[in-house]
Image (cartoon, rainbow, N blue to C red):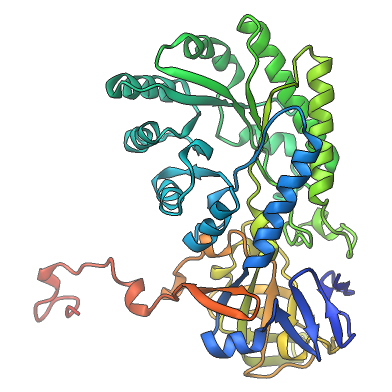
Length: 486
């Protein structure tokens, strides 16, 4: 694995043939993605550029599926990767070919799932305030609907009656999370996981669910299959995950008593598992306190923590584990380390007065790596053509927008100059999905690497794409108006 630097950022070994993980390596001083040299990818496809390793994505899925299947022999195990983490259709098609289901939010993600061949039986249609159109499509296709409110329950019943169909539904829970007092990596102020999770909007409050669930269980239009919950990536501490499961089983015990002995046929524990190098939250005070060389828990460690706690808690509370299907919804854990972001150095600027400071100006932006801001990520940078060179100076890696646009603060780098290419690791999850057009910047394209092959799976935007939806009223196009039309 990469060595940690004194500034809290992993740096590659100076060895001339170093493997950073199963698909990234340094060969004769240059960074490779599978069998593709990163510098050649930048030269062929241009920068800024998202790059995804097909091999890593497939390996990540297979490892999570195997880890949970080996540790949950009580019933079926299904992996439903969250489409929101990366909705590129080619990547979703890869996961579909592996037998993956998916979690979808809204019409756009539903379109992505159906367009890439996901079996409707393996789709969880999630999200609050779902539209009638989405619910109609989901019921017609036979997907499971994860109910988020009493209103949604009644709407699903109405649609199912009108279509003469039985709808498969399950309840999204809102556990109390009473014991999760650890600080969340999402909050620089150090709010607890419990407090942030309690403010998060999805799910049916338990006091409401006790009442409306009884109606759902006897409704002739519905098949109630189970429950779903999602905590999210607040922490890599496995005690947080064990506490989450205990809180879920508390709700199940409550519902069993309220509903005359009902138990779910399936339990979906959601996602939020970290990728190995885990850039999330490393710019928060609690993130900076994590050991520099600390890796996130492995899929096997996550699986052991969740399944062992679920098994013991079900038994302790008088519920049956045998026969229950277990589902998980990893997003970042599958996509993040399958991706990296390539950017070219445009200028190196330094000053001595009034404070010594240095900036490496690039052709990318935090607008294309939005978790620099949203989740306080610290990316691992590598100078791809000098990947074995030791760091010699400290500089902010900055982007081209008009804001501060600090992509990596106080990065330790070898000497770089205009034309050099930097790689930012672990950007495969959420970065393309959240990229925006601030400063009218066209968003980067995505290249898929498989062995020595590389090909576009999402073309880069053009400036014309950025303005394609704009319309100038005709009165503003005439001479003397505010604009001449295009």
